[in-house]
Structures are given as C-alpha cells and as structure tokens.
Length: 104
Image (tube, rainbow, N blue to C red; front, side, top):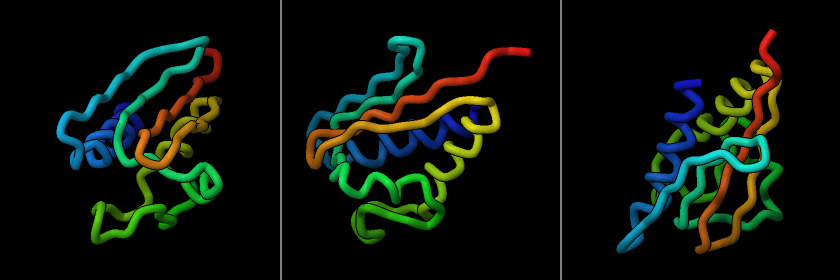
C-alpha cells in the first residue's frame, strides 16, 4: 500500500506543480480512500487509458514519468481485493478513489 500511496501522491504533486497554489487532499469518503488534487486534470473520455501500462494522457515533455504508476496502483489495489476509479476534468484536477477488500 505504501507504493500505491507514493504513486498517487507523486502524481498529485506532479500535476499541481505548475499551479501558483496547488492543493492535495487525502481522505476517506463513503468507504473509499481518495487522493484529490486541483492540478492539470484530464478529459474523462480518455480515462480507459489511465490504468494501462505506458499509456499517458499528457506529453512526457510537459510532465515526466514512465506511464506505469497508475497501472501499478491498480494492480496493488486489485491484489488487495479492491477497486480503483477516478473523476477528473481538464484544468480542474483529479480525484483517485480506491477500496480494499475485507481482511481475512
């Protein structure tokens, strides 16, 4: 879970970095954990690409990265019996939600 949070927080940090005053929030709502930022965001029409390895929604020259962070997060969340999803809008930020399965 540490790796999942590092990736989600790292993305939030990266995509708010060009804002004069960026905000990142971590919390829990309605049984799901979330990481929210008010950064670059993205068009939800392309959200199906987010969790696939090496798929990027922003040019690598604008925002560095390998394109595997969110795929890694999804794999970790699934391994823990959970689900990962997002809500976003261009220039309005993104929120990544996830749940975890029940403890044995």
